Image (cartoon, rainbow, N blue to C red; front, side):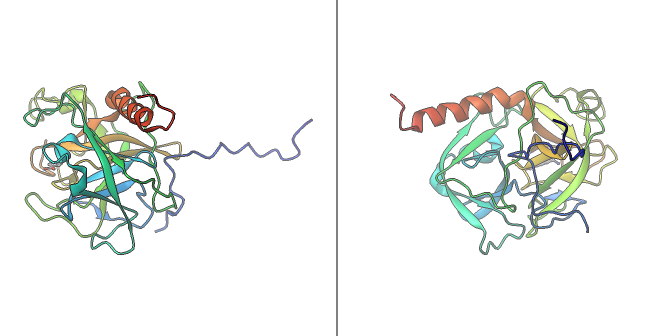
Length: 271
Ligand code: 4AZ
């Protein structure tokens, strides 16, 4: 039977990567203050009640961040995860205790690779438009040089500066590994575990305190986590773009950790 209504069928609603409380109307260096609901997957990780790093909600129980944020501080009781906020000086935002912290076993503080960690929340998040998960990319998915993506966080707004009270964000283009490994840029330091984003002329970048937070790209109106803020030389300097942990490279590690934990904690497990 023909459909009476010939409008194209709407795609099924995605369970991640949407921003139901954000309508476009209206330490990140060179960015702008973000609106509530604009980056609903962004979290603030507090250690001893102080903002230390960013992170991204990937499921109701799991936050993805950088290993260098938690290395040496892997006691879950020292951390709280603040969600659904734009201003630090947290009022009314959900804050949640952490049950477990897992960082990549091959991460070394003197190295730059494997800069990825997961935090398992002690209780599940309620998604409400201001708190939403971001999608992980597909295995083997490629993100082209020049694709415009977003960085966000409460990090410093200048090199050596203080962290910001307001969540800030900026649009930055992805750079190819070839571009980022040029002699005047990072001269071969960029591995398959990293993806660069930013401007070779400088001016807009992530900075100290943004670490662990998202490099997010919108792909047919679904937001995907392409990177986690990892490192850089200074902030917003010429030829020194931000370097992010490449999420497609980390997918099997992420899935393994989440599945292992879920199997261990499930009531039907024999372990
Ligand atoms: C940091 O220290 C840091 N410009 C984060 C990002 C960048 C540099 C440093 C990238 O956490």
